[in-house]
Image (tube, rainbow, N blue to C red):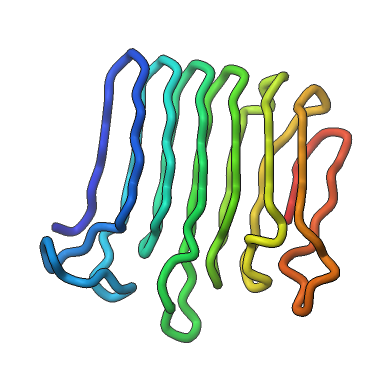
Length: 168
């Protein structure tokens, strides 16, 4: 299998990825070399997508509705010069975005469609210093960033704007 596309229809969907899939089949250890790129597309509804493990580029479109996206993946050791990319569009609606951990050399881009009333929670101490997290926010969103930049090495550099983009 070259890639995995999970597409659901209208209604409330709850998707949790516990272990990143690979092209070598069940029981094989997933690595950057055998990992399968993932694409999630949910329809309208109150959808939830939780990514506990990543090893390949991942994209998601959560559609219209009050959706929840949670990222807590420390991913695999990547070959030198390699990066993982996670692109998520939460769609229109008041969404909840939780970023608990991001592994090394990962670029995360989350587009909340600047819909007012989003809840964004980021744990800065769970983001590897070599990674970047960018979340589109609006002035009506509730943004909570926890974690310490005083750690050595600092886990991330971030600022919370009045509106625009929250970049970590």
